[in-house]
Length: 308
Image 1 (cartoon, rainbow, N blue to C red):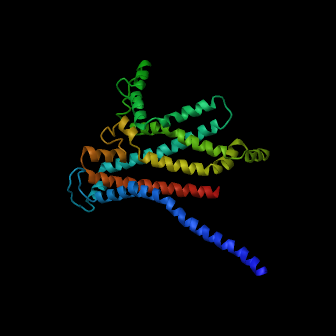
Image 2: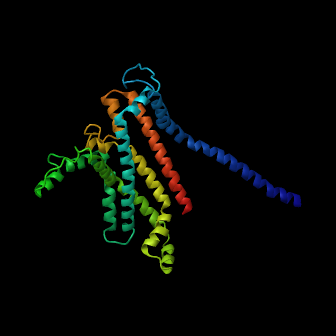
Image 3: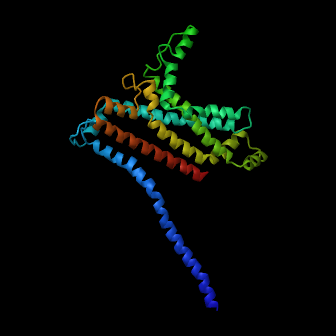
């Protein structure tokens, strides 16, 4: 009798384990559509781009020649490449710093019970839903040398007009500010979600211990927001490094190549100069930069999450 009881106890365990294993195996089929999608629209185009980077293809001809590393040698000897890399890093890192700083500021402010909180959230987030190209044209009308709103205001106060978009020393920073203004709402929303997930018990205990507001922010808020910081930084870096629309609308990459990003430079090489092989080489470079910076940011902030 006791043997039967023991067998009856063991059998469900074995069957449950077997069903669990089969269930886990069947779940792999759920990944198949996503794997096929990523392979078809990301992996294959990227690998084909790497192949084209070893050719002299003009983007339209049915024939082309394999030239080995000639395009890569040309890229690293091209002064424009270094200007483009500098601008791309400025757009990526500069936008990331500003968007996270302002986004956290807005989130801390709007997490309190203040008047017009909902309206303020809407106003901050509203630019996100506008097309980046349209946003670029809106600010072009503001910064334009002829009949721009900024110069009209300066002339009204008796000051000289400035050609901000035509100044190579200024226009990259204008692009960073416009990109930050448009997408700071995303950072704000993510930080707001993180703040609302922090229990008030931590702050009450800290107040009892005599902690100041800054100490509470440093020892409670920032560590608890580590996952939100990770998400925001990675998203902002990727978005900033592949910036395209705003640059096309504001400066077109000019004057010369002074404000070109990797994306706009590739576009110019492919469609204007019919130099697809070299454009693909630039694409491989920017993909490598995005991958390295994103992985470094992810690794660093994931460590901070664990320490927190």
